[in-house]
Image 1 (cartoon, rainbow, N blue to C red):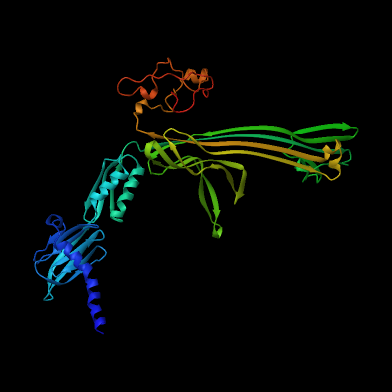
Image 2 (cartoon, rainbow, N blue to C red):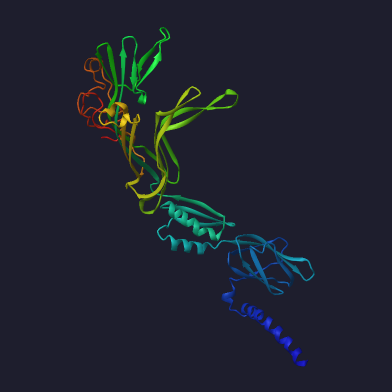
Length: 495
């Protein structure tokens, strides 16, 4: 029993020994070491201000002994009582809290307003290590916030600086940084399309008409011919449809033979080129549309009709982001659409066309002036149709009189190319405009010569927009005149 009772003091000493070692480290440490870690509290009625950086610790010493200590918000600061007159205080999070000490008589002895601020020095060192090429970043502390000011070279470094500062003051970082350099982006988009088509049709219908109205007809494929009752005579008359493009007739005795044919070979070629250009600031969305809107009737209750409008034409939407080393990341969405009445519908008496649309949406990263083919299409469609009468249409040679054939082939080639540029504002005097090369024709040029635009007297004549500028007008070479007025250099950037 005596042995067991002697073990209890030993266990207590083992628990108290680490605390005594910590206290002795502060009591007998050199004065130079403990000078910046100790705060001498004064006996005053008003609260005292105690500043800490996040992760920093200080020893608070009081002149009189205290019985109890309490921190209002333990998430901002934490305390450990070392002795009746010493307190170990540690900053845990950015913010402000209150430390209260009670004396042995149970009354409040000291009140401290503890302000825990971010570690600005460590943040500056880390920003310098991560972004050594950004000397213009300024780091400032205001209460429990961090303010980043100055100039960075691109948006990527701006995001990096904010990400580095966020752990030092979560959700309390004020961004006052500005992106220097050229941040205006001009997007050039080229949408080029070629369409080729081939159509072949052959159909034959014939009719025999005899005196005494003993008539008969063979062939009614593809609605080339038909009959219609005459409201006056009551007789059926032979009519041709709009698909008929060849009619032959001859007489044999009292019989008249009429041959109606649909013979067609059609070649089609279509070229489509759209080059929208749009400028916006880095990180901002921009939209561009040249076209229009067509109405679509929407039936409603009680026989009412509302109208909705659908856009069509040449459109461009993009969001650029200027990166480091002249790189540009672009979210680009070009679109070219046109009305197609051949595939439209008729609704409540309105003819509603369909839309032929070419649309692309993607994200690419390019350098200044580089081009990228973001989309391409090669499409070939072949359609063959044979309409014939059973058995009769299978007879060699003569079977062509009892069948109708159609062959259609379409080829489409499409490519979309984007080119971003970093641009700066320019002097409007040096900018070429689409109207600069137009001169209104006089009466002789328009009525007698048939010119649609006037002829400049000499190549050194100034452009109309430059004739009224202040100072000496800039001379520009004239485009060579060609009859018709639609030939020559095309494009508003032409010299």
